[in-house]
Image (cartoon, rainbow over the protein chains, first blue to last red):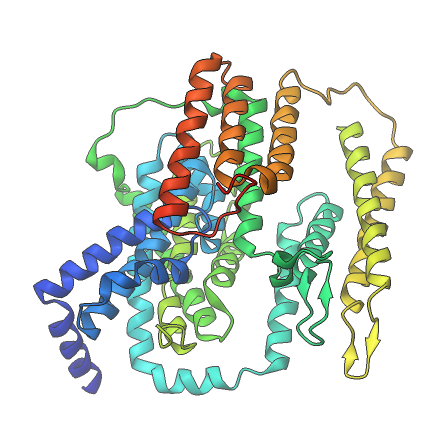
Length: 332
Length: 148
């Protein structure tokens, strides 16, 4: 009953005309900033902070939430359309979203990402409201052994990506670890591989590497194979932006799975949006009846691909709350 | 792909050896546990081992007919070299002029545009970036010798 009362109070505040407008403005600005590669939600909120100076705190928080989701969706737009992830959580969206865009179904890919994210996010938030105190106690019990187990599991999951040449997986994993060692050592504070360059002391950000890997590779591949980058001209109708009923049926379990994985990972301190999206994708690869189609050019079976775009977005949905747990909003 | 993989394998091996060399100069084990050189040393050794494996594996196999350099690979290489030159010139030219140089050169090389539109676009880029990002938004972008 208390839950329903809280929900009623929340909706009665959030659904006022002013707050909806603030949310809309937040989402709009968030999307504009989110489209720029490499700018994540915290940076976007810091940039757009002056917009909320003269707003009451409740509306400002609603606007922040709007900016956060807007940035997350802005990252999806570049992932699907030009194969460059706008932020780290949309890396997985690139893999199949871009394939759909090349098949002329960019609209469907973008809409399924948005709707899937909304559905799974709503489910996650309802679960969170119902079980928040118990979940908070669980999250606080997360210590070094649990973090170690999480890291070990992440390395274990790399075998799923392995494919036919495990040596390449090992090399790329080691390259990733090598890049992670650049900067100050977290234990001793000693600089590693900085070679006297002050900018390297802070390490290399994940999104910089991802933009380089996807964006620069895409540029070079389009230089070398210009015919692959041909623009598909087609008539667009509003109904093309939505999935067919069959596609929704095929996507239903993926939305639920994405929501559950995002919820669990979102609860873990330091789990976060990127881990959730990777785990959701890898999990779906395991659950899928046709894992060989993942990341490959689809011959048919778009529903299958749609599922994979939903997942990373849905998995990210709880992150905003997780974010608040970490106190990232408080300094603002 | 054999030649490409061989070049890649040799590159991985050299990188691994370099990592081993530089991490051996850091503390391997300290009073409180693994030192700053611990992880990179092992990472370097694994990378080197992978490089050796790739090279030996390729040398054992028979090479078939292959096409390593495609017709347009040269263009890709030119762009790559331009990026490196731009990066090296940034401290001298500053960000706006450096980026303008890059855009001008790529337009000329890739797009095969005439010199006039390339130069005009480059100038507009430099002025635009300077006034929008440096003057207006006060973003601390690298300044060159002329203060731009």
